[in-house]
Amino acid sequence: MLDPIPVQQKALLAALTVVIVLTGIGARLGGMSLAMLLHFIQRIAFGYSVDAVISQESFLRGVSASSPMRRVLMLATCGLVAGVGGWAVYRFGRPLVSIKKAVRADDPRMPVIATAAHALLQIITVALGSPLGREVAPREIGATLAGWLSYRAGLPPEVSRITVACGAGAGLAAVYNVPLGGALFFLEVLLGTFSLSALIPAITASVIAPLVAWIGLGDRSRIWSRTLRSALRSSFGRSWLDRLSDLRPIGTRVYPAENFPSFAIRFFGDTDSMANKREPVLQTISIMSLRPTQMTVGMREVKEKRKRWRAHKSKKRAELLGRRMIPVVLGPDKNHYVIDHHHMVRALHEEGEEFVLVSVVADLTMVHKNAFWVVLDNHRWVYPYDAKGERRDYRDLPKTVADLKDDPFRSLAGELRRVGGFAKDTTPFSEFLWADFLRRKLSRKGVENNFSKAIERALALGKSKDAVYLPGWCGPAEED
Image 1 (cartoon, rainbow, N blue to C red):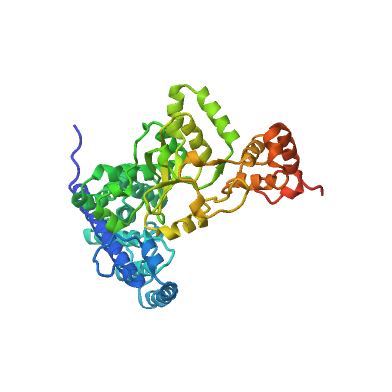
Image 2 (cartoon, rainbow, N blue to C red; image 1 turned 60 degrees about the vertical axis):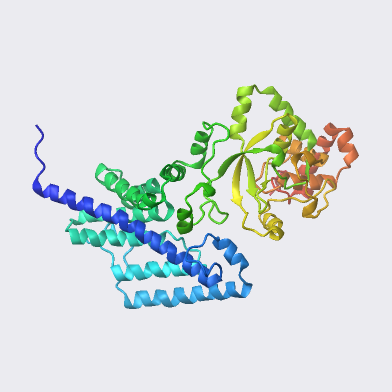
């Protein structure tokens, strides 16, 4: 027979349970309050949606619509508030205690008034344009609340340290809807342990925090799917998790913002917006509905891709379609603009494929149509140069991948990289830069009539000092 649990241990367990539950609830309510305050100050500061208590207009759109003078004024105000407010907190408040120090101290309590003032100061400055993260304040509030509740409940210091860390994790879970991520943050970063005595309170507090909102929001499975995926990605790495994506059938979608409860979007912001992009939105899209962001492709390279595609069996083709996602940007006209893999999309189209899996890497539906191409150009997501290497107006870009024109120098650049003429580089449109370099050295007729000879000449040119400025140049090293 098991020995009965002593009365003192029962009382300690009951007190700990109450503290953890109240900490989870308080962390969520505190996070929601701070989020509302953040959005309210943002709207007042930059003058958008001021007549609405809760607005779905994004911060990016609101700031973009404000005048340059107002933006400068708000940033100056941000600096003034941060300086004066910080001085006041440190001058008149009790000494601040960081969360890391609290979880290692004999008395893990954090000063309530000083910490609350510090958290409010962070929210105000973030709303005015400070680059600080908005998750720090809710973590401090959650940890402070947990320390105060632990003291009132008479928990011993070693237990109180766990509850304070729980509060910090619950604050993180509350503001970003990441219950598992909050628990992992608490266990790995703050306590450095995965013991059962810490694991159970961590998961409990971090799950209770989002549950407070889910009770009123519904649609829990979708939020949990996203948060679980985000936590796994942060814990095990992007490449490991992306391999799990291969198991999803084509057409599976990872719950974009339009499927989120509107209440959650209002309080926590659109997590799929351009400013806060954390995870791609996967969709199956008709190839002919995709809009190119470049004018040309190398048709010789397209033919090679078609040849390799035909060599695969049907099962392998399905695997490739599920793994080779096409990165796109969602424009103000709701069209999907391809920002990479134009050659593959054109090859698939010519092979009779009708649909591809795309990854929406940025939602720019809020951007004015006259500013859309400027934004793309600023991000180096568009290359409006024709087959002669001349820049054209954005209106001249093709409407479908079937309208892409042939640039033999782009094929030459692609083949040059494959034979070792230059290294693969992350610079956007690097192969077009090489194509433009080769265009100035060789004739188009010579490339089209004798591609093999053109490659030989391109190899020599690619190793020369004339190409040293190009991305991926791997010419001979200078002798000492």
